[in-house]
Length: 414
Image (cartoon, rainbow, N blue to C red; front, side, top):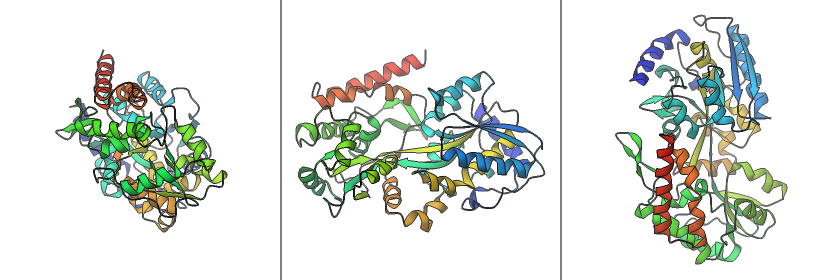
C-alpha cells in the first residue's frame, strides 16, 4: 500500500521534474543536461559512488555538469573502500544521514532497502522500460514499480585460450572433449558461478508467484537443481577437470599460466588475462547435457534515490542523468556493459568481440534475485563445498542447502 501511495505522489511530481525522459538520449555524452525551470534551484545534493577510480572521476565530472545546468551544488563521495559499504547505505539512510543519490549499487542489494522504505520509486514517465532489457527492468522492479535506474551490466561467460582452442565449444559434448584435452576450471564453491549449471539444468533460487519472487518457494532442492549439483560434482569426480580444493583464484592462475585452456570468468579479469599475454577468446557457455543453455547470473549496477532525501525531485533528475547521458563514458573506463539497449547495440560495443560475447550470454542469463531473503542464500552456499568434496550426495547436499536458507530467513525475520 505504501508503494502504491508513493507511485501516485511521484507520478504527480514527474511533470514537475522533466517534461520528457532523458533515457532515450542516453548515447549523448558531450551535451550538458538540459536545465529545468520547474525544479527548486540552489539545492545541495550528496552522491555516494560505489565505483572507485577511474569510474569515480566520470561520476564526479557529470554530477558537476548537472549541478551547473540546474544551479545546484553536488558533493560526490567515493564509498568504494568502506567496509560493508553497501549495507552501510541502509544504516545511514535509516538514521536520516544517508546520501540523496547512490551510484553503482548492485541490484541484489535493493530488496532490503525497498522493503524498509529507503528507496524512492521512479516516476513512470521518467524511466522507459523499452530502453532496457527485460532482465534489467526485472532487476530493479518491485511490485510493478521501478526503484532504481539500471546503469551497467555484468555476467560471466566462457574464457578460452585461442592458442589451444581455435573454435569455442557450443555443445556439451564439444565442451567435454576440449576440457579433457586442454583443461577447465572455475570458482566451483561459489553459487554466483554455479548457477549457470543449476539454472540451466532446471533449478531455481526462488519461485515466482503472482509476479513476485516467493521466499517460501526455494528451488535449490528441486530435481533440476539436484541435476545441476550432480553436474558440478562430476566435474571433479567423473571428468577430473578440477579437484575439491580448486578455487577461482587457482583457476585464474592456471589459465593465465597456460596450464588450462578454459575457465568461467567475468569482464573484471580480462585485464589480468591480457597482462599475462593470453590469446583470449570469450564465448557464451556451451549447452548443457540436457541440451539447454547455461543460465549464468546477471548483475546490474544501479543508481538509486534515497526515499528520505529532502530534495527528491532534484535527486531523481540527477540520478536519471547519471544513469543515462554519460553511460558510454563509464563503458570507456571499465569493463562493464552499458545497460541501455541503444548503447549495447552501438558499433562501439558490438565491434568488441568480448562485449558481444557477454551480451549474447546475457540473453539467457538470470538476474540475481533482488529480494532481502537472497542474503540467506549467499550465507548458506558453503553447503556447496560439501557436495564438491563428496561428503554428501547432490540430493542430500541440496536439501541441506535449502534447510540452511530457511534457517537464515527465519533469523532475518526475527
